[in-house]
Length: 184
Image 1 (cartoon, rainbow, N blue to C red):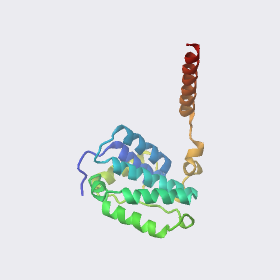
Image 2: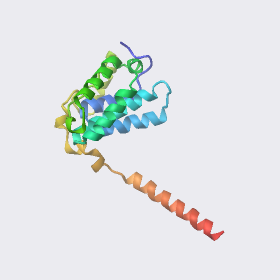
Image 3: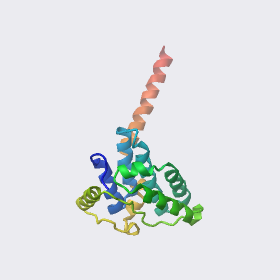
Image 4: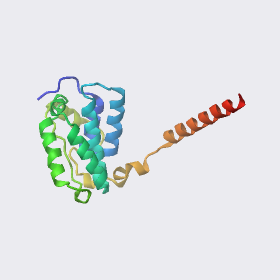
């Protein structure tokens, strides 16, 4: 099976992080940024499903069963297998995998982390993702249980300086607007 368009580099990077470093938080960041800048109507839902799958894995590995379960339900209900096929994945197999996981994860207490490898059908996509994984210094299909604690708890250790600076600038701007309004 071959995808219908040139493979987007962020998708390759997502797959390398997902199957190599197992940095699901980074997968979310990569795909969310791409989704925001490339809101292709035909694939917007597919990018969102991939974001949800990565965040599902992130929550499951950290023991947040309720968060993982919610994201699994959303991904399973929103997946469009034909669109996933066009992206180079086996959409029907992925839909089946999500359904099987829902059958096992009947409630938050039954959520158990395991590697959830995406079924890549396009040989060119697979080759590109494996090469990108190697460029990252990672091993394709490395076990997620062996991920470094900084990867597992990424949201707790990431540098949020730019977010804090932007928030402070916004607060100052609103204060100036209020003060200017009072002076009138």
